[in-house]
Length: 186
Image 1 (cartoon, rainbow, N blue to C red):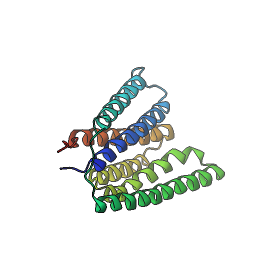
Image 2: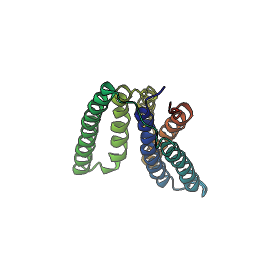
Image 3: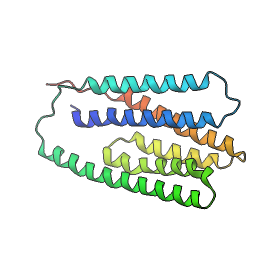
Image 4: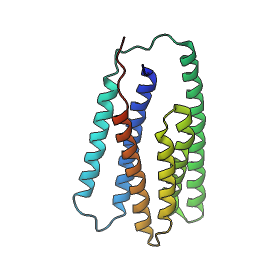
């Protein structure tokens, strides 16, 4: 039987990833001056659909209790501390890169720097939360952003970065929803 706390964590993470993917898709599309009229509604629809499914799956876990497991409880607390550390480092790196890029006249590069930092942060989270697909999320988003650096037209580069981030996160959430089942209470 899967640990209900782990299952809830996956669905909660799915909510966060879905919101982030919505942000990245809208950022990307704002850099596409000749975008077709249907693209923003489509991005919003995909984001809302995934968000609703994540919320429904999380809601379906209410009332299910984990058996008392002091080892799992201690691991949960330790994981929470490590998540705070990883999130703090990510936030500090984003803040420092935004400040440095902004102060040196390279503010346009901020979304690209953020995307790289966010992509890399999935690598330790994969091990910490025991969600192996996060290795793929981190690798694909980081490599995708780096590949976008080969695009010479800057707005097109940011469009590519935003779309890479949005699609990788949407696919991660869809995969997690397809693979994660709500445990049956015994």
